Image (cartoon, rainbow, N blue to C red; front, side):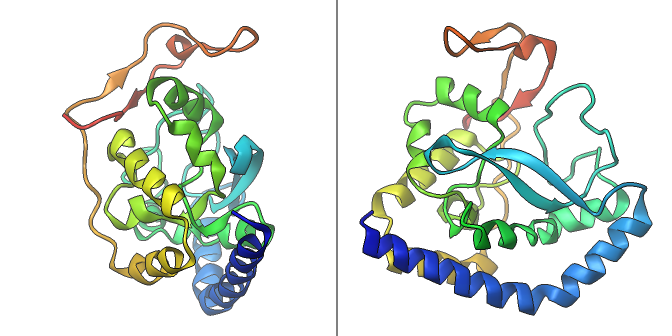
Length: 226
């Protein structure tokens, strides 16, 4: 992407994000009150994710789970995650929990459109298991994306989601960007993928200096379709 196009995307992101923050302010205030009343703990939840060029940043979300839900280590989340608080389940299903990410867009860490940012723990596994996964880092992660509006979110197939993400990376046009924004309210239902998963029960070595001991933190990830 040349500097002119990058400038256009950044301006579009900032203008639309500011507008959405203003329009969603009553919903955000109401959500913040409900989170505070529902369970003890902070209103917002910050979590480390990989952004453009694999640069780490903290993503903002309304807290949807009880405090210390991941004391035993990272767990693959789902829309109907049993660790969710009462109001958290509603916020996750409606995606209202993601509204604070508009401030990540304002800060330039995310775009309105792009591949969803992944947690380093899982991203490093996908980089090994799925060829081309690292190409997602060529663009900013997004609040919505081509995969998401086609029902590939939550516990859907990561492999199929990657195909749609790379399609966006290849096209990467302003027209496609606007098309995805306009289609987001009409997003297809989530494509469930629970039949074919990969379970890790032994260490996975990613580099000479770094090893992710997946066996110490058991989890199940829907890598590909059956």
